[in-house]
Length: 229
Ligand code: URA
Image 1: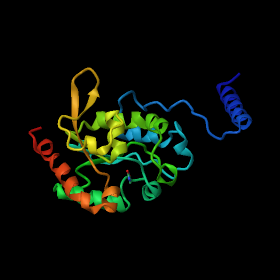
Image 2: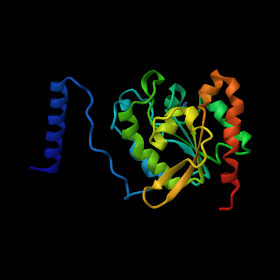
Image 3: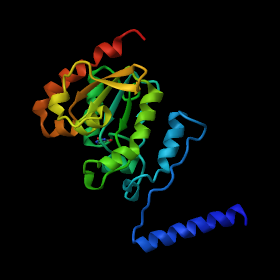
Image 4: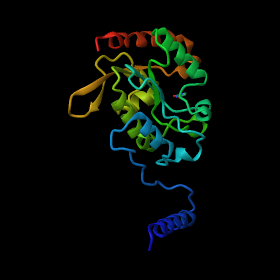
């Protein structure tokens, strides 16, 4: 029997199983890095583009992998793409994105200087908070982004991003302003990246009175941005 016949049989078996079980979605084996691990951001983006590791793939228009300077000193991590991001395939391009752009400019940087990513790369339906299994399924992409960019500092936007990156369930208020918060790049090696936790720009749009505190948070990024390389 040829390889093509075997593949066709496997596909038919899978379709029969899905039809029998009444579900249109099953986890499938993951695409592998194009040329070994860790690969490049472009290779990980290509893998993400074909990812069907969680149900979020069902409703997406695009996979919003992330964008910016692949050698950025500062990495922003948001929650998940919204409707605008899903349509354009770029992170933070809607109203919250407009405010994030202003926050970046307040640091005398541009969007091209930093890298912007999200905890999950596909839009959750109705912009709900990503579920634990969705965060888990997407985590390897976020870990790859951090590992390849190796920023000097990470700024998480909102509770979902802070909890996901720091592997905790603490409320945002307990994490903001905490000194010594670190992301372990390679567990056990002592390679760590400082993490500054602040509000999500969408929260700041709803609660402009919190912008002053957010600015205090952003200023804590400065020593890391301007430290010698
Ligand atoms: N909110 C997010 O958390 N990420 C985006 O990309 C857009 C809005």
